[in-house]
Image (cartoon, rainbow, N blue to C red; front, side):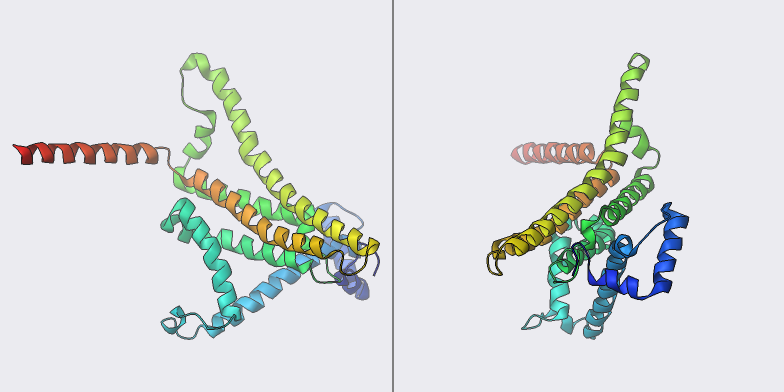
Length: 284
């Protein structure tokens, strides 16, 4: 198989109508007049991962016939227990970070990203396939979804305060230029730097790992690249965790009210004063 070519490239090339549709799609929506089989391969691979997740998800749901009995896990690794382990791990991470209420509310976004990135990364471990997450178009799409999610939830929870707090605290009319400068920096950091770094970090880790494995396989025998394959497995496992961890942090920062910390401190102070008064009353 030629370098940087997968089975999806051959699949696209085998069906002229599919290639023509890819060409029309690129010329209409992407601004590219030429979209060949290799250029369309990451999109087809990403759609393949989505299809696999939908099929496996429906099969796992079909295994849960009785929710009360399903509380007891199976004695062996099945499709249901696999999804329970993966989903439970990422939900536990979110619960520890933002609390059970927010974790349950925002888990569909983070959980979907975790499964898609995890399956996409391990697709590249199968000979003849390339991971769609090694292409910046795919990872940028994931980052844009994250950007849209925390922006939507931030506006829904805080309203205009989600935008106004980017300017920092109000320090009087004389400090308006400073507030404008702070707003420009925070706006750039929140809406530009976050999605760019989120997408590039994921793409570079997966692309470099896959390229390094290809080089090792071409230079040495079969057993020598095994350490690189072990490293690739660790990268495929760690990158969904990093992506979802940062996504959870961004959503938490966007939905957290700035008065929550002050409210908790005021409540604790009030409870302490109440307890001190009760102690003095009992002593009297």
